[in-house]
Length: 187
Ligand code: ADP
Image 1 (cartoon, rainbow, N blue to C red):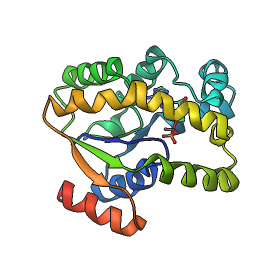
Image 2: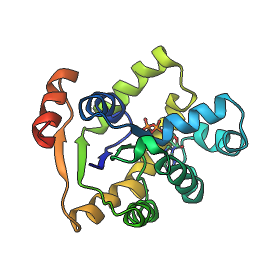
Image 3: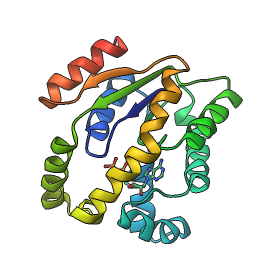
Image 4: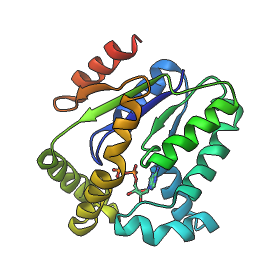
């Protein structure tokens, strides 16, 4: 089963993705985590992505599709994956659909975590004090929200037109939201 998690930065995709991946026994493909690892290890990919990520802008579709292609080719991903933060532009939506079609698969479910901007700003500020992520500083957060509104929000309509989107109001406790995800997925 291939499931796509969508939502603004700080919506809780990462947290819920880990829980869902554990329940389904399939891996999570989180481009943000993979990029942060690359930056930490100063790989050629990391050196290319670092400044863009820190500014809060989106990394190029070409780089993202390269990462996703590499992940999907791994044996561990053969039974499906949870896409976390991957599809952020229409070209990425098309690219992922094409990659999956090539291996006889498709996105089976899109889950959208719905939260207000005000809630997000509060959460990211809190995360900055805990994790110290460079892109959680106020200017970068603003840029990430703009990138989300301009480039990622239109992707929802793309999926609405092709099979639908399950919306979950992502406010409340982690357990409460996990329960709603479980009900939506059936597991
Ligand atoms: P969040 O969802 O909290 O914004 P992520 O960890 O998913 O955080 O992403 C952090 C940063 O990594 C993004 O702001 C962007 O620069 C880059 N990134 C991650 N995934 C993608 C993607 N699919 N397309 C473009 N850029 C991405």
